[in-house]
Image (cartoon, rainbow, N blue to C red; front, side):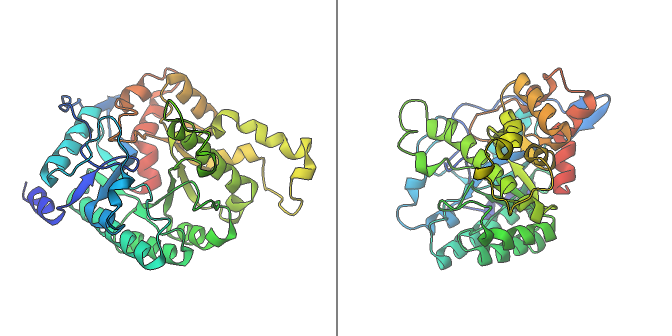
Amino acid sequence: MTDRRNFMKRSAGMMFCACGLAGPAQAQAPRAARAPVVIGGQRVRVIDTHTHCYFQDSLKLMGADWEKLMPPVKGVAQHFVSQKEVLERRLADMESMGVDMQVLNTNPFWYGAPREQADAICKAQNEKLAEVCAAHPKQFAAFAALPMQHPDLAVQHLEAAVKKHGLKGAAVGGSVLGVDFADEKFHAVWAKAEELGAVIFIHPQSVSELAQRLRGNGWMSNVIGNPLETTIALQKLIYQGTLDKFPGLRILAAHGGGYLPSYAPRSDHSCFVSPQNCDAKIVLKKKPSEYLNQLYFDALVFTAEGLRHLAAQVGAGQIVVGTDHPIPWEENPVDHVMGTASLSDVERVAILGGNAARLLGV
């Protein structure tokens, strides 16, 4: 309890939130704690790799309009609450979901910021993430914030995040101001990530070029735009040969990798059907669909059939739990995995926590 009280005092101004939003997790009271997960007599440590939080210190560095970063979403109050209330609610949610550890990240809101401002925001964000993880090492790990619009600065922040702060890698968007991650300007970042063994978590922020068409009923900018942005990001990294240049790069894709795992074999036929649309100077080392087996994907695909297909396409050893908490996209991640009849117990143990533990080194 002493460590927790000290953490509350040090981290005043922190708020756990999701997908660009701030405030407490849900309005209703937390559910009862779930019994620990046991499979075949083995206690399984459940690791949720896809969760979000922001910090007041870094948000306010965006200036007076920082509140515009937080559009309304059901279950997320648009105001600050005391640190103790926010943290205790987060821990209670984890217990009710059967989650032992969350890997925290922040959706990048700073990609349009100038160099000095972006530097300050990411520095503040990563320092606070390190405080959370140091105070609760069994419950939290984190992906760093990087100023990707300034790749040389991003390299510096990534190295400090891993070596100084003990973070597990970095969270990035699906592109940076319309520039794809396959662009050569980002090669230095991927080289550093490969050198450090750092995980790069790709979490999309919709496709800005389609903003007009994605307006209307149903929050299509998220429901369609987010998976589409991830699909484009991964496909570019494959087709442009980025994954051949950095074969040790460890990439984790949110939302089950978008649409790519559902239609990956189509990629294998493109240059045969239309060679004029393929660059003869880029010769991939294997079929495009085969690169999916070296990427990692969260299990946020909602149905047992979706998870069965994802495992069949990429391999159960490449899948980890991801909930998007505290936005309630997936509130029963253990049931989702346990209820997928096509998975063996060995595969369930791997997806619930073994794969993440190996990937993150926790």
